[in-house]
Image 1: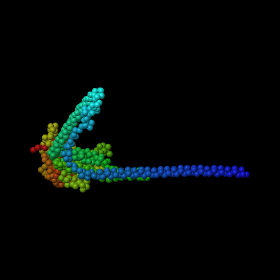
Image 2: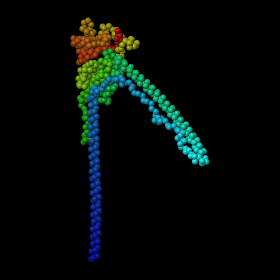
Image 3: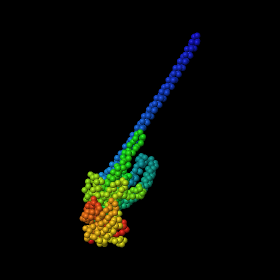
Image 4: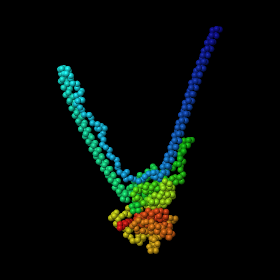
Length: 534
C-alpha cells in the first residue's frame, strides 16, 4: 500500500507540474499576444496620428495654395487699377544728359600672374651655400682645390638661373606690352563710341530744341517706350508729328479684355478636396476694362505733355485700337475703342489724382466705345494715315510729285467745287451755294444715313496760315442758322489749339490739309499742297 501511495503521489506531483508548466506557457502565450496586440494598437495609433498630421499638413498646403492664388488675384487687380496713378509718381521728362555715356573706361591692370615679377637671382645667395675653409682646414691637402671647384660650380649654376630669369623677364615684358596694346585699342574704340554717342545726343537735343519733326517724334517715342505697364500689355504704338500746329498723333494698341482676371475668388472645399473658382460677373469685367482703356488714354496724353520740355506739343490726338479677331467672321479686326483730341492748355487744368476717368474723357470730348469689351468701335478724330507725308513745305517737294495738282493753285471757287464733289463721292448729297448769298456757307449737304445723318454745313478754307477759332465760330453760327445737324470745316492748312477746344463738345468736324489729301486719295485723286513761303 505504501508503495502504491508513493507512486500515486509522484503521479500527482508530475500532473501538478505539468499543469503548472501548461499554465505558465499559456500565460506566456497570452502575454506575447497582449504585447503583439499592444504593439499593433500603438502602430495603428502612430499611423493614425501620422495620417492625421499628414492630412493636416496637406490641408494647410491646400489652404495656403488658395490664399496664394487669392493674393495674386488681389495684386493683379490692384496693379490694373493703378495704371494711371502709377505715372503720377514718375517724372516722364527725358534728361538729354542721361542719354550720354558717362562711364569711364577701366584702368589698365596687370594680371595677377604677371603683376609681381620673379625675384632676380643673387650670386651672394648662391655663394652663401658654400662653407669657406678655415686657416686650419686649408692645411689639409686638397681642401682649397675642392673649395675652388665648388665656387666654379656655383657660378655655373648662378649663370644658368640668371639666363632663365632674363628669359622669364623678357617674356613677361612682351606679354604686358601686348596686353597694354590691346587695352589702348579698346580704350580708343570706347572713347570713339562715347564721343560719337555724345555727339549724336547733342545733335538730337539741338534738333529737338529747334522743333525738328523727326527729333520730336523720336523724343516722344522714347517717352512712351520708357513707360512701365503691367505684364501682358502690348505697348505697341505709332507716332506722327505735325510741326505747324504742334500736334502729336498717337495710335496706341490697347490690350484686349483677356488681360483681366476671369476669377474673382478661389475657394477650397475640404469635403471634396477641390480648389473652386468663383467667376467674375460680366458687368464687373466690362467696368474694369473700360477703366483700363480710359487709364491708358489719359496716361499716354499726360506722359507726352509732361515730358514736353520745349513746348513742342500744343495738341495731342490719341486713338486707342485693339488687335483681335471678329468671332462672327474669324477675320482679323482692328477697332478703335477710344479717340480724343485735346490741347495742352486744357489738359493742364486737370488734377489727375482726383478725377473720374470716364467723366474726364467726356469733358475732353472723347469718343469712347460704350461696349469696349464687345469691340464696339468708334470713329477716330483723326485717322493716323491722314497725317500724310506729302503735306510738306515747298522745299521738301520731290520732282516725281510734280504731275499732281497743287490745291493752292485753285481759286476759291474751284477749291469749293473740289470739296463739294469730294463729299458727293463719299456719299453725301451736296449742293454748292453762291458765295455772295450764302452767309458763309460753301456747301449744304445731306447725309442719308439713318439716325446719324441729316443736314450738314460744309465750309472750305484755302488758307496758308493756321486756322483760328474765329472760322470755327462762324461755322457753328451758320449751323444754327441753317438748322444743321453737323458742321464740317475743310482747310488746306492746320488748326490751332483754340479751334479744337471750341469744337470738342460740338457736332463739328475739322479736316486739315493732310486729312483732305487722305480723303482725296481714298477717292482715287492724288494731289499735293504746297504752301507759299512768302
